[in-house]
Length: 293
Image (tube, rainbow, N blue to C red; front, top):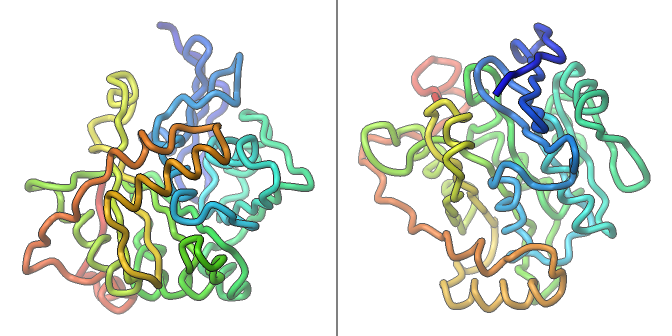
């Protein structure tokens, strides 16, 4: 299929490129695809991991404010806005070029429900403590993970930004992360570092494996699979049975996603290798730990 480059620019995060192939438009950062939309139906979910972001609603089904850290072309933001019109959404991205591309090429427009902010994610959270019910973390640069946003200190800032939820609805606020890589095997070190570091801050961590089409796996360039990681700072871990019960309840409430199917991709946290380190600001500054895709 012939492709056409609509936009190409070197930005703070790396080289941005918008490419059309048939009716699909994809934003690339370096060689990594960030967002794909259907030009005929921009609200249709193309990349399956976008659907899996909605698994967070199983843990907290009545969020009032959702914060996206990382925008890309805005497919995740668009999906939440169309699915839950009563939720206020803020999307923060450090790169003004990314925000402009989302507006111009991916048709993302601000309104009473959605605010787009150009800012460093950690700096934004530091001045907005106890301000949101749900954080969706999906931040990458052209080299993969910008490690500074995935340190223990960064997770602590996110934890402080999360409000307590409604009683009986999961308790504390929820962090949802889109992580790319391998859960097991010789290339699993990055995800193991992320999981271990998350568990040093949040009391409960859940992993869901995204079921991708062969096409989306090919577009991913062999960078591993997508995993949606959900973390809560309070409350006892939920059993598979309790997760299903909640998913059924949320599905009756919203009917816009198959929440039962989403939670069926739950994966047990792998046994972490003994030498897996915590990712801290200090270890990062010393060059002792880094994340790769």
